[in-house]
Image 1 (spheres, rainbow, N blue to C red):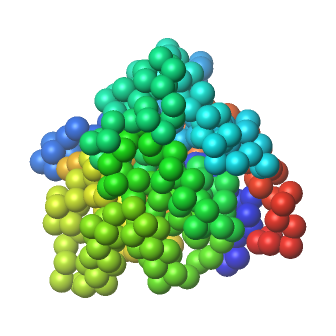
Image 2: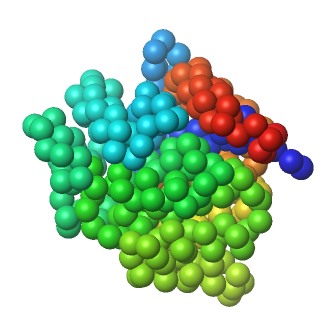
Length: 323
Ligand SMILES: [Mg+2]
């Protein structure tokens, strides 16, 4: 079934937020602890947010929203430098917001503090920061450059410097952006894998090799998902993207199965959920995501509005493209 661009963009926005919200309560839990809860099958955590009972998402989705808002504010004609500055401004705003109380990563917060004190965006992240804090928000570039995956990868890899300087963080972010863009544009699986491997290779050969391994593991029926998700716990940028690709490849057309596999893992469950959810959402579109998950996610109307604004902005330049 062909999914139109509007539904795919909404699929990425909601896929990210829902995958993140499913994983958020179990982010720091071991597998025995998650098993003792009966595994994650639905939102575990609901609280009153803006007057309604909803499932909260974490800093991952907050930062993804900040990137997308920054890109929208900069506009379609902005170059990398202008857009990075606008995104950096959104990060500063987020870092000081009272809503920033969802276990934000140290590297992300340190980068924001440096930005706020006047440091240039390319120098605000620490060179040794290799966490997944940039990969988990880079699906925004996949939306923005949905028909140019290589450009999505370049902008994501560069913007990573705001908070993370290590090549594995930049490679992870580039691969997430390229993979999301490709999944919006095309449904072919080998092409998705190839474009992610190449995007990572531009920054870090080792991350690229892990994506190759992820593909090999997913094809091998003797490989158990639990072993792969134990090996790649996703705290690092390279592990997050390799583990998420593995979940996508195991369930390329089933949003629910893919994100539940990603979050029922002993590592960074919310980031794996967000990245897997973004790529699955891009493939199946909003209509392929459980309706009750869409209705019960935090700030669902704001997410709908954001997705619609992103869609109307990116489609103007792509008349004759995917429809
Ligand atoms: Mg998080």
